[in-house]
Length: 133
Length: 125
Image (cartoon, rainbow over all chains, first blue to last red; front, side):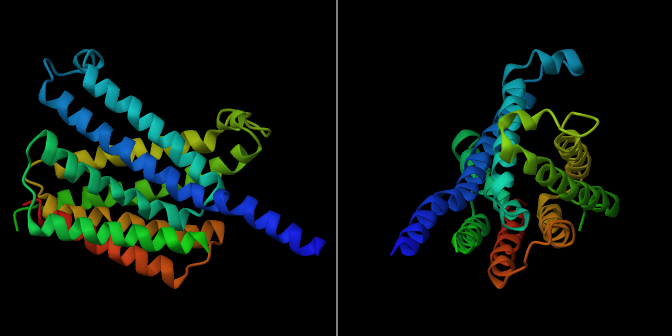
């Protein structure tokens, strides 16, 4: 009886810890996509080329900060998760960037992009479910 | 096909270098289990977490080659599929350096993602 209780407790304690890494990379891709959109906005409004122009460009610098934050989350995810499982999940960034550039820059969405989004999301779902076992 | 081979090679090089970024981030992340301080410091010489720094450096270097590669006349429809090759390299390194099991689930998930990235590229013409 005590053995079973210990196993149960271990499972309860282990489950969220195992599920967490994929969730962290999920957040990391949202931040990464936000970074790319900010950098694109910054690049569109780059007053003068060179380092000074870049350093005074608020959206561009904001983009770099988001990238830093997203890398930190990736490290926290990798500390508990497998690289082979988590690295491909980064492809979710393509999904957010496609959706955001449609909303922000009015870039076109076509059947190819839509199919790609569906495939990437399914792939990530497969990896997410596999990692839970 | 307008995309020059030199641009394809630049993007492939970027993907290759980026896959090592993942490897160094993973090896630098292991000590962080004992506390967040180990993001920066290390118990062994040179007493800072050089592996994480190397991971970030590899990512920055890889993004440099990406940007050079996707410059005009590089076409995203041709170049995006090459970017996703980086995921396949990473699968290989995970097996070699971290002895991670390569399961059918991982192959299937990766396959869907790679085909998805190819499609997003095809839609970006």
